[in-house]
Length: 388
Image (cartoon, rainbow, N blue to C red; front, side, top):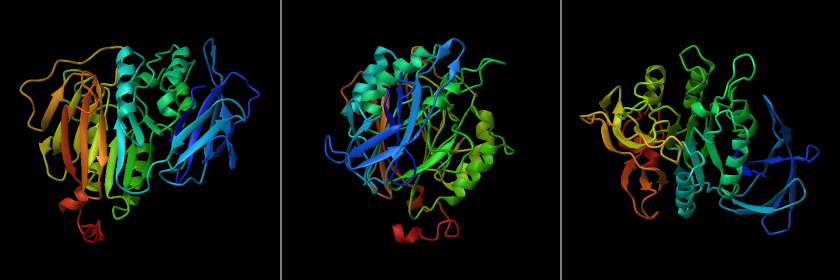
């Protein structure tokens, strides 16, 4: 039950699922033909207790190496339903679907239906998954709700405030999230499942933890600095960051909540020439111009808030007036985003309202990579000319 997949290092995928049977094996059989499994992997399992709730057996098994842009058929635990997944391409073009603050409402179902119509390779989710909010069985119903999509394309997630679920002296924060949604933090040399990075095709993607320590003395800060320093922009010209609490937000909801993290980490992102920063938390959509330190800057990231996936709390419809100069487009509607990275220099971002048919783009823009814009010095990116 609750099968979902995620990227787990070079040419590998992590298969995660839950069983009621505590004796079930954490094995995955897989191959490129239906019903014919040429390989088998054994993984690990865990479980957790939350007050009077006891989870099923939660399995995590890594399969691979896998061929890029290939359909695989797989079966969990040596029996039961056969699933199929498609691995992402190893070169451009590549398409990401993006939706945060999903929850389990009718709007969530509409968002997932729209995403299902998108020919995407990887789903990016900047926090607030199930909105279980201490009711642990709602993690199970969320896993069942997203399984049709999450079992066929990798879902890469980071935590939001609704994942914390801590009870002082009784339950540590993020116990449910960390048990169920294991991400490739170890593969990216992070010490915490709350922040990590991965590479796919020509993009390096950093998932930050808004609810992990982030000041200049923190493990996350030092990990981020080291991770950004390793990025080879000749190999991965696109650099994206996801986090839950937006740093640039002109909505009255959650105003200023990202300021401390922004003060600590914005210089790192600017120095690394991050192209795009995606956030959730605010239940509305907003896209910025390229911005740094509160001002338009041609070498700063584009910031997008996309916390409008379908949560139970409704939309955040009140904005600050006048609209800040850095804010390019804003609207309180449920929907999802898509970013198609076409090549090393150009990507196409589009936002799709649930109210519209999927092909309708309510907001869209071509984005030039900072690699191609002359923002990286030759000292930081000696190979830049070879890309142009």
